Amino acid sequence: MFSTQDILVLLEMSHNSLRVFIRQLMNDGYLRRISGGKEFTSRTYKLIKNTGVICPVWVEKQGKLFDVNTHKFGVRDPTYVPKVCKKIEHRPVDAADYDAGRVLQVLESEPEGLDLLRLSERSGVLGARFATALSTLVDDGIVEERGLENGVPVFRLEVCHET
Image (tube, rainbow, N blue to C red; front, top):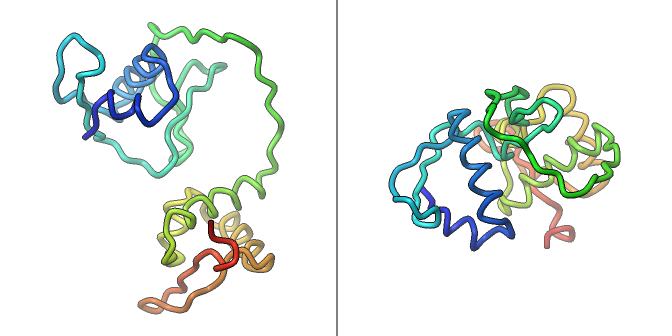
């Protein structure tokens, strides 16, 4: 459970932006309002659909949320019309770099490391793409195999690369 006040303290986000995003998450079944009255900052929500470590993102062209973890679009909210203040230039990201970045992001949050199966699942990178990303990171000396846990290899960031 979390309150909107908690989120506003942690993120540099306007009340209105957070209100719209929470409404979309509720429409797509990710959140449920637990308590709170008319004042937005006093509301409490509960996560009811946890699909992975990456938060869903709004895709303007589709007018829908996209869940990177499941690779699926959510329900369209006809009441939401995003306001774009300025055009943002997006640089293309190489898929291999993206996959390696996701694996690193998960390992950064787990200093003791994760076994191969949990690392793949939590990173959202699966199959051959995961194998390629992990072997590239190991070959580059960024990630190391720490040993076996129940017969499954455990990986962690190289000690010299930890922050």
